[in-house]
Image 1 (spheres, one colour):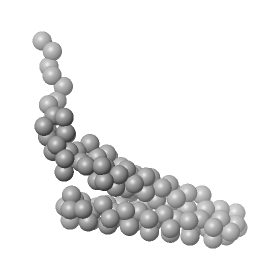
Image 2 (spheres, helix red, strand yellow; image 1 turned 120 degrees about the vertical axis):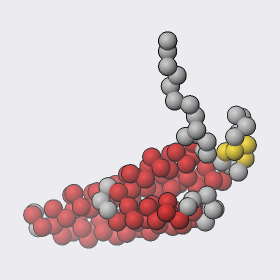
Image 3 (cartoon, rainbow, N blue to C red; image 1 turned 135 degrees about the vertical axis):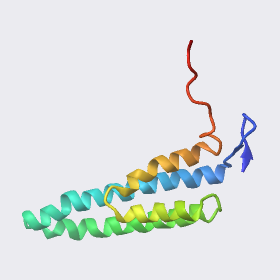
Amino acid sequence: MAINDQGRPGLDGQELTLLKRLHLASLVEGSTLAILVCVAVPLKHLAGYPQVTAMMGPIHGLAFLFYAWMVINTASGGMWRKAQVARLLILAFIPFGTFFNVGTIKRRAAGPGVDDAPAKEKRI
């Protein structure tokens, strides 16, 4: 960890890059699952187009593998607790779950101590 301008510990360039990739992987994985569940499966069962799921299934599979790899790769840096890593992985199995991880990833990318910032000051 590096020290930022405010004297608080911050993230170095490599950690920030990993978090940006994890953020992207989370969005891609969630989007491909949403397309698979909300578009491809109904087209298969209601309209008789199994080709859509045959095409979208492997795309989502690759996106899921990329997301899982990025979670493991990012967590291996030691900046995540086991419960946080488990949350990132468990939410990947729930439709739209990875979209809930975006806030966690953004807060982590903002650096430690961001939650310690004072709330809005009261005006008198």
